[in-house]
Length: 413
Image (tube, rainbow, N blue to C red; front, side, top):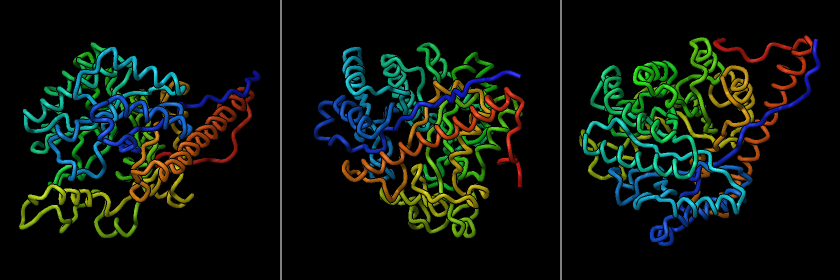
């Protein structure tokens, strides 16, 4: 028997800058693109965050998707219309230092396997600019999607991944970066009926993709940025998902977290089922996709008809829903991460991602206390989980004192 000191280790808490895209008005930031970053860094300090995840995207004048067809304003806090050079990097670093804010990583979410070669090349070229900016800013990761060729089957997309995505990973490797994939299935990405439009949506796919990466020497540069909201949408729970990865020998794959929840509407599930297709959504007119881009927003009714995103802390405490996998059990989420994944906890980022529709407000004064509350909630939940883990798995275990009770179990029905 040994006596081990109580030494809980906490994760790093940050916020994704897409939470308030219009913090800096376009008439101010378009001619002075790095002003948006400076304003967001100062805002993050007011919110109580320690880090920001910097959002990049094709500018509204450059994107292939009209802004009016998007659920949220274009999230290009990092504006890359002009080359991001050392002078711009120094300006951003000065803002971070002045506000005592860190930079977790840079993110750009788009379809890297788009079926149109010209469109795909434009997205790849922009991703390479994101890689270059991330390297100049000294971060070690970029977060994004894999995407899907919607004209191909899932198995055909594995060939697409090998031919088209592996070169991106090789480019990341040369810059010392890891590409972390968020697993959103993106059901409303197009007006088509495909539900899974980002093939890297589930552990079974992650493992297959990682094996392809290993074959090409970039396995260490492909990781997952796990978001529990998407697991809930797939009918999964975090503990079982992490246990599956551990049992398969792939619990090293998760390298960071978006903390965003999902609240399932049982009536919506009763009507359409998980992953079911809806009809008469409004994105089709006369039997074909509407010529009005604004109508394409209705494609997201494939998802929102049965679920609503949660900003952590905004959903009621609901033990029954936790057990039914209809909302995120945040405490067990943080416990399971420590118990089942290969993590350096003190270097792991929890990034608050705000997509709760009713609170998705482009008004600084109104959204500020909402984000402050959610960030504080995430910090305290992680601290509680860290304390439980240290007490049970380190202090008590070292003295051979058993932990009480059973706890939530993976794969239990």
